[in-house]
Length: 412
Ligand code: PLP
Image (cartoon, rainbow, N blue to C red; front, side, top):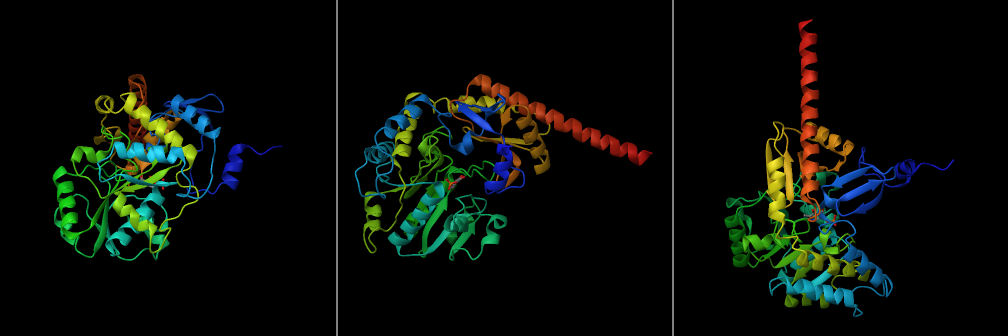
């Protein structure tokens, strides 16, 4: 008898968790996922901030099909003129400040981080780098060295030398940036720390200190880009422009794509000493770039970004419960915070059992993640919040029953 797909999944696909969600999804459209038995989930995490235009937006599907009819991979990165790459780079440059006008496409966010680290070393001739506590930048060796959490780093030592981790949003800490520092890498909103927003003054001071010391400021907008926080880029709100911008996740509208972006001058340093200063076979795959162009067009033309604040407001209004101790939002990057990880986990389990797909944040397991497609409707928001609040009621009842029975046991 043929093995069940679930058994094959557990046996042959490398597992990274003892308890994967393991739903068997066969169809995804907009905000809705369906499994093999026809059960339905509202996806309020959008593939972890990937599907900003929803799953399989018709314009993205069309663009993918059209490009598939022309060509897939042709040659390693940067040799041939491939219109999806060139047009996407030019389009991104048109919606970025003039100093961010040159794009290097990668396959993933982590690779964009790696490229940016190399670029910063190359431009400044320095090797020290600064990152922040509770920031996530990816899982490859260099990106992992930047991760601001010892639990996730420690098993993989030795890591890259010369990296300091500073407290995020701390003015005092900026004194650590000096003329030895090649770059500072920061998220304009810390996502995996459970949605932590910096003060605008802090980002302005960070920019100033980097400029004074000749340090390159890198913004990791892999999770916050493409309208997620209510403006096209999170840095738009802070009026601080980085020297290097990192994109990923929503960049490919559901297809794998990353990018590091800087000035044309800066990028020129990858062309000499050594030539081919950064190499990728598949980075900027034409089908992924075609999907990305279509996705960005949808974002810009369908008023999705201007609707973010109102949709976020609806989440905030409806996520009220005794167990929810805080709700933080940077547009549609939202968290409902619980007192502890166990409570959060139980609410998440309830949600998944009752038609809402959500999870937790890497450095904040007591925080429930909400990062839906920006296309989510009011009805879907209402339905998802109703399930989350019912989940809270359910967990509260369970906890009460356990406490009551403990009390009963003690008395008897
Ligand atoms: N940077 C941030 C802020 C992220 O959230 C992530 C992924 O979650 C990455 C970098 C790494 O991206 P990828 O998983 O595509 O390598």
